Each structure stands twice: as C-alpha cells, then as structure tokens.
Amino acid sequence: MLSVSKRIVPVLLLSILGGCGGGPEGLTGDIVKYHLEKKPMKLEAEQVTLTPKQFECGLKEELWEQASEKFGERTIARLTAQARALKFDDEVTVSEPGFKLSYVQVRGELPVKMTEYISANERTKDVWDATAKLGVVIQHACFDKPLPLMGVRKGKFSQDAQPVFQFQKHGEDWKATQLVH
Image 1 (cartoon, rainbow, N blue to C red):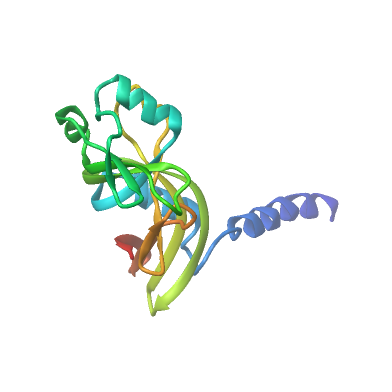
Image 2: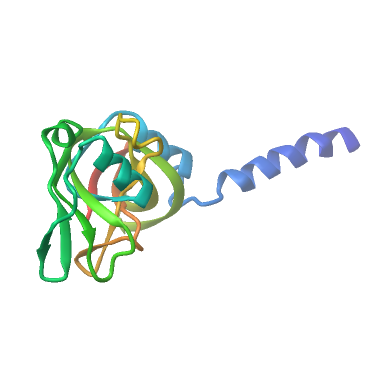
C-alpha cells in the first residue's frame, strides 16, 4: 500500500502542476512558449521599450541621433541606417506623457523570448487568446536582454499592457495565428 501511494503522489503532483497557468486542455504555458519562440515572428509596427541604459548605449553606438525634435509633448530621436538594419522602424520616442520608458517600433521577422505566461481565454471554439510577457531579441551589444513588447489597451499601445496572441487548435496541436490588437 505504501509503495503504491509513493508512486501515485508524484503523478498527482505533476498532473496538478501541469495545469498551472493553463487555459484550455492542452494549451499550457510551455506550449505557448514553444509556439511563440520556435521561429522568428513577423512583427509589423509593434512597439518595444528601451531602458535609459539601452537608449544611451544606442546613442553612443550611433543607432539613433540625440533626441532633438519635439512634436507637441513628444520628443523623438531619429534612427540611423544601422538601427534600421536591426529592424527598428520609425523613430525612438524618447519621452511622451503617459509613458515611463523610451520606446521604438520594430518591423520584420524577429526572434522573441517569452518571459512569463499569464493566461489563456476562449474566444470561440478552438480559438483562444493567450496573454504573455514577451521580449524581442535584437542582435546587438546594447540589447543584452530582449526588449519588452508592448501590449494594447483601449486601442493604444501601453507599457503596462501585455501582448495577446491568438492560438487555434488544429487536431491535437496548437498554432499561434496572430498578435491581437
């Protein structure tokens, strides 16, 4: 009897832990992470944040110019060709009311890293939205950590919102189909 319970307890614990942070049957944080990270993600005009240290490093490395242009209450720094080669797009927003950190747009096929799985919610049958903290990997010394991808709240990018990805079930497998805005 004791040897049977020694085998059952670990199985039960694994079953319980396997469901942590999960959504629908089979869509777990590990599956979301696998599908988001398995190949570079096509990003079209998505925003990533920059720490002050990363912004200063980019300035020293001539990825962008010194912040000088003002558009209302928003201050920007113009990108150089070097930054555009790294798939930065548009200009760096250095300061803007409502944003704590500088941010810049990225565009193209870029690798991503999931840092935290948050939740999954059913949209329709076999279609779920998974919320996760995600960083965009930029291959440059200034960006030793993935740059956090901003989510959208009430139709606007927000540094306090996490990105949401739509997943669709195909047979027994899941596929990430799009970034939801």
